[in-house]
Structures are given as C-alpha cells and as structure tokens.
Length: 226
Length: 218
Image (cartoon, rainbow over all chains, first blue to last red; front, side, top):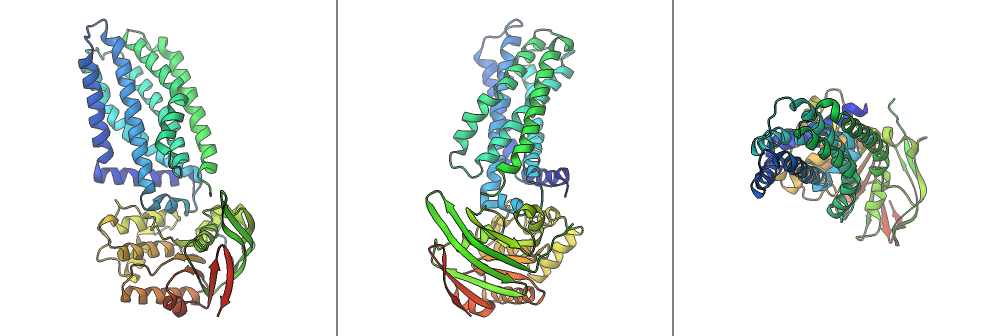
C-alpha cells in the first residue's frame, strides 16, 4: 500500500474519532479563546501597541493549542496499545507519522479558523490587505510546528517521560520557525506588505520542508520494532 | 507481491530488555497445519517470543525465518501474520465494525466492509459491533480482536491468551476456528495458561521457564 493511502487511512481514523467525541476541539478551542481573551485584557492596548502585542498572543496560543492537541492525538494510540494495531499492518512506518501529522494539522487549522479572527477583533487589527499573507504565515508556522511535535510524539510513544520530552525537545527545535512566524506577523500587523515579509515566508517554507522530509525519513526507524 | 511461507524456523533467539534477559536462546520449528501451545509462568518469555514472531520487536541475538524470508521482508510479511495480543489493540472510541474495516483497509483488502461482515457473522459479533469498543465486555472485545487477526487470512496466527474472558460458547467457536486454521494450512501459536484449552487445541505443548524451553510435550 502506498504511503499516502495508508497515511490518509490513519488521518481519517483520527478525524472520525474526533468528530465523534469533539474532545480535542472543545478543550483546545476553549483554551485558545481563553489565551486570546486574557491577552487582550491583560494589556492596555491602543492602535499603536495592539499590533505589537497581538503576534505574541496569537503564536503563544497556537503553540500551546498545538502541544495539547498533539499530545491528546498520540495518547489515543496508547489506549489499549492501539498503536500496535497500526504497527502490525503491512504499511510503511512513515505513513503513521504522516497520517498523525495530517490529522493534527487539520484539527489545528480548524481551531485557527476561530483563533485568528478572534485575535484580529480583540486587538482591533484591520484585516484588509493582510489576510492572505497572514493565512500563509499561520499555515506555514503550523505545518513546521506540527511536523516537529508529531515526530517527537512518535518517539515518546514508548517513553514514560513523554510529556517532559515533548516540551523539552520540541520547543527549542521549533524556536526558529516560531520566531520567524511571530516576527513576520508583527511586521504584517505593523503595515508591511507581502513582499516585505517574503523572506520570513521563505525561511518558514525551508523549515517545513526540512522537518517534513526529516520526519518521513526518520519515522521509519522511530516506529520500527523495539 | 504477496509473500507466503510454509514454515517458521526460530534459531538461537534471544531478547534482552536492558539487563533483563527475556528470552535466552530458543530454537523452534513451526510447520504449516500445526497448532502449538506455549505455557509457562509469568515472565518466562512466552509473550516476548510472540512479539518477536509478530515482527514487533527485534531479537538481541538469533533469527526467525518465515520460509525463505527474513526481517528484510518485514513489511510484506506483516500481511501474512495475524496477532491477537493480550492488550487488544482496538480503538475504544470506534465501534467493533469500524475497527475491523480500518484494519482490513490497512491490510489492503479490496472489499474491506464485506470481509469484516463475513467475520462478524462467523464470530457472532453483529449484535453489538455498532457500539463503541469501550462499552464491550472483555470477551466481546476479545472476539473483535480475534476477527481482526483473521481478516487478511494470515499464514501465521499468533494468539496471546485468546480464551481470556470468553464464555463457553465463544470458547467453542474459538476452538473450531483454530481447527479450521489448522485444516487450511495455517501455523497457529498460542500462549495460554489454561491447560485444558491447550490440550484441546494444540498438536504440541511447549513449556517455558526463564526464557528457555524446558520441556516438550505431545
């Protein structure tokens, strides 16, 4: 079976489970709303300071929602040792990583559909002219972050200190992507054009390709036999 | 390309987990059309042997040959191995039917839903298989797990305590099913503590102690 077909089966199973329980979307969605609301109330913002604070609040929210979401997604595989049902199938090991990454990304995008407009409204940022580059930045930043976090969740599937490992290893690794995304968002909110943030978009794209490629390559060993 | 094999040959198989020696050099041969039961105390290495045979673990030493094939063909060999593990490896949030269809699709079975329905009928799962697995009794979930192991008509069927939680009728069905696997040339290896069950289904019974085979009975 091809890697993509198997990956889609794994992702679809995750989405099917989530549609049934709505557990991940509810908990992370509420968390996202809470972070943005607290962020907007905690600072005295005006048209000058709002664009400076909003990128930090937005990306902190995405980061923590992502970590929560990925942790929960992989914990589904630990219940009843269900991951071994996937490992017993004659599919490429990388398909499990790709499938889990894909489902986590779809769920994170669903949360971002709520999060980004909420952030713009609470921080009174004019959306006209920045939506397209903002969507690109959020997309690319999320892809890099989820691809990296899913890889370390795969490592942690048989590790007791998985949550600690996820936090300790993932945050430093995704720092370049998150910093690039946050700085580019700040520039965009301050009135920069798409051309002016193109350099950051390129950095994010390179990071995404690097980590997806590395993830696909290394997951065959990470998810191999013990 | 679908692989097939007529026997499984285990040579000098050892497995350590850190300083703990789980399997200390085991030599075995399993032929097509035979049922082998493995017994022994907890921690004697029975389940480790099954995990190695299921290609879910790497041996520390020794090797397993599936006919002419070895670990280099692991991805394809998995399509010929069925495994009923002690932890049932089912998604609690999915129904039994959904678990079976997912497994059938991952096995590359073209008519996944039909095959799942066939096994649902054979193992009498259809009364409850639309409910989430988390609502099942151990015996009901066990039957789904057995059905999943049989979906792709494996040559090698590995079962870790398959009779756990089964009522008398289900145990009889399980015995009939194992008998059918034997008749159709399957290689069945069962880890069980239940002596009566082992004597009913097995052609030979092996005993393990501290990672070694200690006695061979007929």
